[in-house]
Length: 117
Image 1 (cartoon, helix red, strand yellow):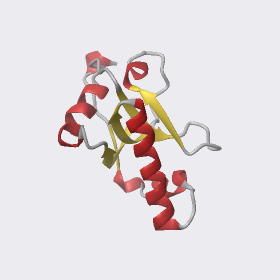
Image 2: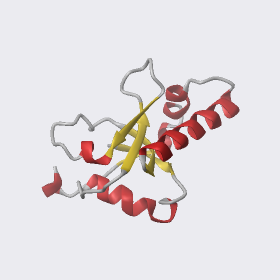
Image 3: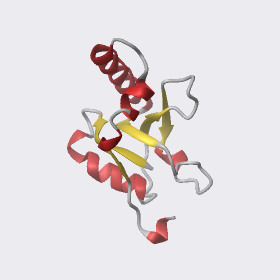
Image 4: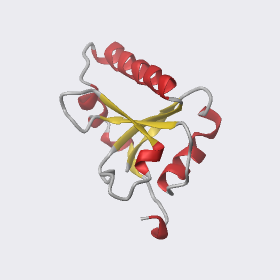
């Protein structure tokens, strides 16, 4: 996974967002946590994926660009809306993918332990 350096987090997990990130990278079970990533389909804006789903070894997460996390699906949808609105206010368009890819220097590949592969 590749993480936006200043990734977005919902209010309830903002103080512990680095711990949540660590748990996701190390496949530690997390109930009700959702990852917001650039869409795997260029026709869409964002993907909202359960952290439980990411624990599957076969899930294609190698090149996933994570830009946010939140607790609860409804909160994740709301955070995704805020991200889209922020991109629109800054650029005047809804090209979320282009906006974040233009800031490639702000992405870091997440590191995980060797035994967690």
